[in-house]
Image (cartoon, rainbow, N blue to C red; front, side, top):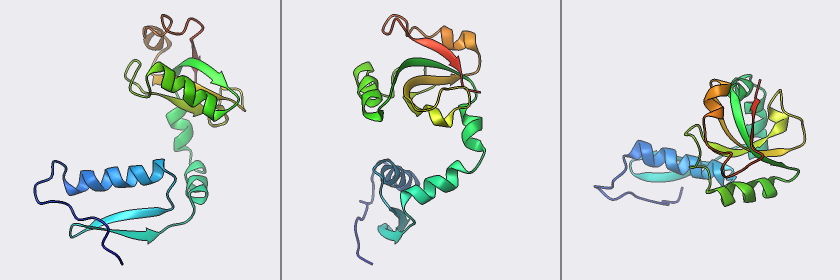
Length: 148
């Protein structure tokens, strides 16, 4: 297999962190390959298409367990691109109360109406914890919703 990348001897990141970042980048970009770090070289291994991998993940109940909690809804849209635009306008995924702000597909959450993409901050353990986050100043129509 071709040699793709070789780390320098004293890089800031360990090989394990580098591997994790490479694998995360591959998933985010929709790549159909997984990278493995062996003796300082990254090799490609063919994997099933991303849709098949996601189908396998979605068949497990842990996705619903992650949905439990209270979310601050910052806007819902019929298109994922419109929801992503709202998220970008708010400052991206690093803003909010610390639980994480991101676009959710409402089909994946039991108490959400199907067919929407919402910008959500959460989950938070309690409604009062979610309500304590100061989103109302930026988004007057923001509201808290239980995910399960």
